[in-house]
Amino acid sequence: MDTIHKIGRRKTAVARIYLSEGKGNITVNDKAYDSYFTTDTLRYKVLQPLNLTENAENFDIKAKVFGGGITGQAEAIRLAITRALVAIDEENKSVLKPEGLLTRDPRMVERKKFGQKKARKKFQFSKR
Image 1 (cartoon, one colour):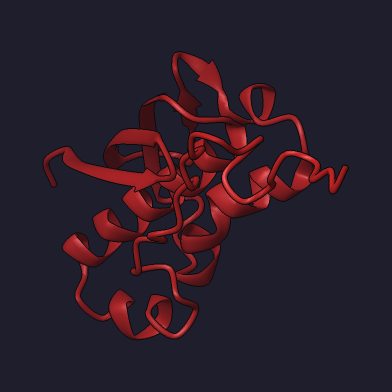
Image 2 (tube, helix red, strand yellow):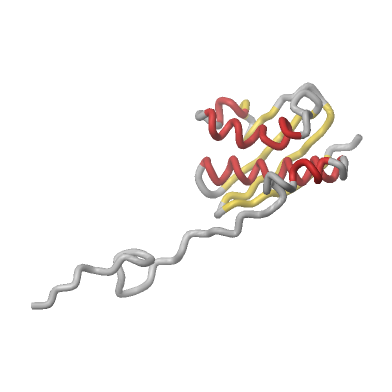
């Protein structure tokens, strides 16, 4: 099997992963994934597609991720891994699709409008 290259996005984070056969090593921006993602929730999100398809020990993953915060980056990596697993074996799709992992989350930050404090918050109104 050759190395598979896939891209995942979430908010403003973009993740490019390279998935190859191996022992289950995951590196993110040349660091071990568990030192890059400090909380258990983020680590769980990264490993979710591998655990669902029972491939956690079968593949090595190198991820380059930039933009956004760490939550967006973790979810971008999750989408990229999911896409790679489906590219390897189409049967993985039936496991990952019901979990909603194949869908790119379209939610983005709403822009701030002029004449307002934030996107929706207004300046305090004074009657007098």
